[in-house]
Image (spheres, rainbow, N blue to C red):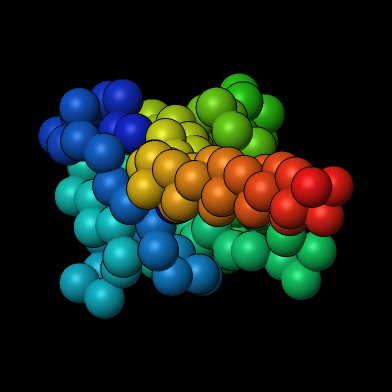
Amino acid sequence: MVQLRVLSGARAGEHIGCDNFPFTIGRASDSDLLLQDAGIWDHHGQIGLSDEGVFQFKVFPNAFASVNDRQAGEAVIRNGDMIELGAVRLQFWFSESHQRSLRIRETFAWAGLAILAITQVTLIWALLS
């Protein structure tokens, strides 16, 4: 999952998950990330996912934003990139992945291999005697 870390502004310290794309940012109530800080337009920008699996940040017309301190109209964003919108600074981040435990499956796989080995040894012994 993708998340945005709010580094400055009224919501500083929050982590917002981005599950659906395009993910819109702005002052309007229909925005996925609602920001009420100075310099934020109703529809300020959006994060999208291209067909090639690349994340892109697009700034709406008349709005100003920068990605990694470079003014951006549209930019490819990567893990750790900084997005600045008005008085708000965001960090684009991939959340940590959590792997479920495979201990039970692994135990059954090793037990199956042990049973197979014992069966083979028993069959060989039976054929040789």
